[in-house]
Length: 156
Image 1 (cartoon, one colour):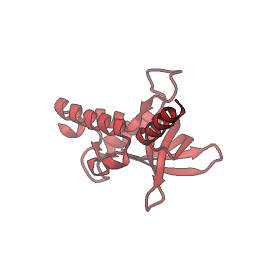
Image 2 (cartoon, helix red, strand yellow; image 1 turned 135 degrees about the vertical axis):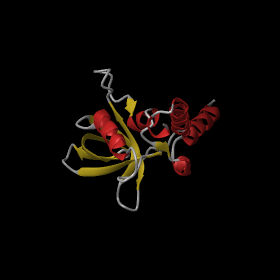
Image 3 (cartoon, helix red, strand yellow; image 1 turned 90 degrees about the horizontal axis):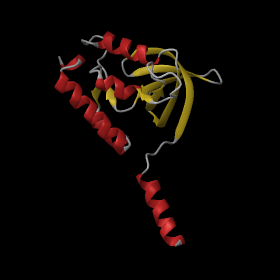
Image 4 (cartoon, one colour; image 1 turned 30 degrees about the vertical axis):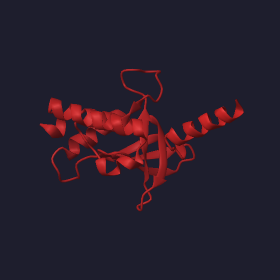
């Protein structure tokens, strides 16, 4: 019985998403449709690059709309960031969760990256799919394909 429990636990740990850290913060600014700055409880600023998505660059079509959409979702809100590493620029690469506007009291249940994909304000960054937990990868791929089918945002 103990051996099967140990094997089950080992399998669960191998299949679970690898979140090395969780950061609680307040979204202080949004610089792009996939990048924001958080202020931590100890007053540190952290630059967050949203894992798994790519929004238009500053001079590309929809860049400002994507930035504004992310700002509408997250600016000024408390957030939970699930992350595993920093990139070569020192940015945290992670998933940012906030409380949805239409559900006060629900807690941090809205993945802003997924919302950006669903609205057509970002593309799923398929080249980085191996860095995403499997469930997140499938959800992001689905949201992009649905936005494409609806011809939303970038897909018009």
